[in-house]
Length: 408
Image 1 (cartoon, one colour):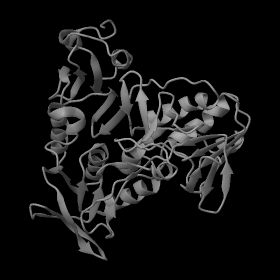
Image 2: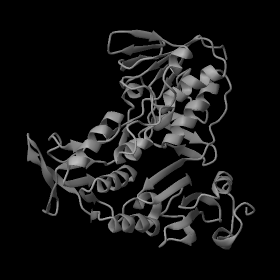
Image 3: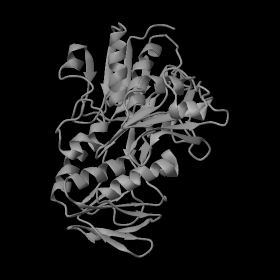
Image 4: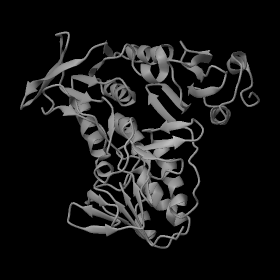
């Protein structure tokens, strides 16, 4: 593979910034353009629904310190949006009329919040949460709000509900599922989070769908459910998931997959020569799982960005990391490693669910550990990573009471 002279990275979030830094760390001396439109330098998203929203900090975790990009000769834009790719001509066109030639191209365009499909989605007081400015605005709204309705009971919805309660708002969470986080964790572990929020005063409207957001141009009044009930609210947060930003890839003719992402191989390459995709949009063929995986978590963005840097320069290595994420809600902290299917995997619990002091394992039919989640337990991280990465076959008894450093 001939060495490139110019690398263009579209998307200046964690994945894109990690790729830009990675090629410099590997000694690349050519041009690097990191195209973004956020007014802030690249930052990590987890603090936006945690520390920033809680008010314990006004800043996110910056990917790199102030001045890093200039010092490493990385051209970082904060005002350019890529509008079209001409892959045959190796050009990226932007909304200012510019054309940017590339030898290697990385698409790291991330995700946007999914919109609420019900009527009333444009009243003041209706929020989504994706950017630093979103988080700061929502925090201000929480401080002033009497009643908050959160639509969606995933990780963003539940973390935001905890933050709103910390600001003394009355909080109701609406979701169509029977349990918050049920699709990810299964009913037994999801019940832990449901009861945690109930103890902190959150009201649940589960098994419910939104018919409309009520209000007028002066602001929201509430949320009307399909059952007919209306929940009054000063602030409504729409947290119904994220949609990968794949429009550029689609119009350029790149293959999209059933999970909504851009198809890439084990090395994060698309079918187009010298074009790669990382982070939220990458539907990656994972050698460990034998199928495509698309993950919308910060750890994947960071590690895929760093990994693709080597492949841009000819290393041609597969990306093998297991998914990882964490959450902090009230006095509960957790880490999740791996990829489970709660509908089919067997749940094995080490510790006490009711006390919220446990590690949960999701185990396959042949006893292999598909995923592990430690809740308020912090001593076994390396052992859990080893069990998950190796998909090791371990008996239930060993998982419940054995020395995890030695099992498997």
